[in-house]
Length: 594
Image 1: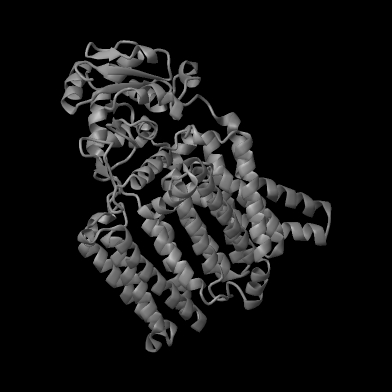
Image 2: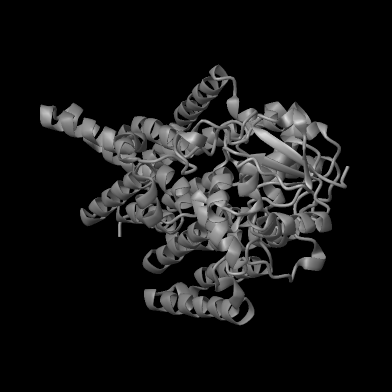
């Protein structure tokens, strides 16, 4: 099997480090200028990025004195709040930036720096895979792909951009693992951090572990060294992450949706086990013994998972109330499957799926031609996992689209070199065509004529209304005395970020009780909703007519409270706040409340 990167290739990569860094910095600066020219609109309007708003709320709480290990969101849900499943590892650097430069600057600096790092890693990986000719395509295709997935605009604080950067770093290090002594250990550390940040990264972590194990199985002493480094770092960083983010009293607690004892114990067992097998001369002496050692290790890991944590093999939303699965989760756009996306939004399908599929074809073609088989196997494994995840839930495209840029840049670079060196109109046309089909924005634009209808499903009546994701939409609500607000879940995070109120619900599965109570009131009989609102201490009801969730719930429950408010029929237990009439967010006060 061919090696991933020869020492000569690594020397070339090292010599071009400054050039690649300059390309990434220049692209990040260009993106920053583009946002500045537009006035940094996402600082004032999240455009529906609820998770980024909630991350900022979490960072504010940390800076205000909430404990490092206390992830409770006290202002959302029923009295007492609920515990978020996010990691403080992402809160920390953002909090440091806010403390050092102020909140507005931090909201710009953090995603811009991550964009630059992500593009730098993309260019480096393309150079390792395709040489000098792949650098320009990587900068263009990769930069546009990163911009397209919209994880790096100002105020993008969601942890997915951090996980993408870690995934790209893991991918690059696995490409260079044979040529750079420390690459295996860095890959293992990045994989463990990726998992510690959030469970969405588990498939990519599994792919990295499999690559390290298979490389050791089929390789030589250099691969054994890489496996030792990967396994050791994966185990150590996994254990440290548990100690750093989970209080000692909860080290043995089982949380399947967050980094906890199950994930840490599997990381320690798998990582340390891989390092031990690779470091034992008797086991590493032959492929058969290596296979035996890996089979035993895999069996131990599977036994631990099945015996101690079988609940973590279930659907991550298995505990979600059926009503929330039907009326909330089914409407979450990023949780839709490829079949759903293809039927409802062909333009989204074209933008998110076609370039990764083409990139997989490029990987397969390169493997069939037996060119740098190990390197292309790494690329195919990472990209293949990302595409499979995106088929299950479209959010996987946030990884598959940027990862696809690396093999696509290599392909375009090869065609460019042939066109320039050998010449000829056919080769030049082939290079131009490769450029075009590698840009997902081209596919999305091409599919726009296929898009029908409008979001919200209400034709022109609601298409022009505000969706109420801007802070200014909640200025009047924020001026009212603090209380508990009932609204659709899409408004929950923005209400927390823009006001000092509590909210009953938000788009987070751990807030099962609060979300269900809100759904019962919004979709239920108005009179019964009033009794429930008083019982829970609801102070205000906030309506956003233009929010897609409002329109969906109104259609699902045409006799419910929310539908009545949209139709202008408020029940007697609600008193309108006159100043909000005609505003994007209309507000009613519950009678008997302040």
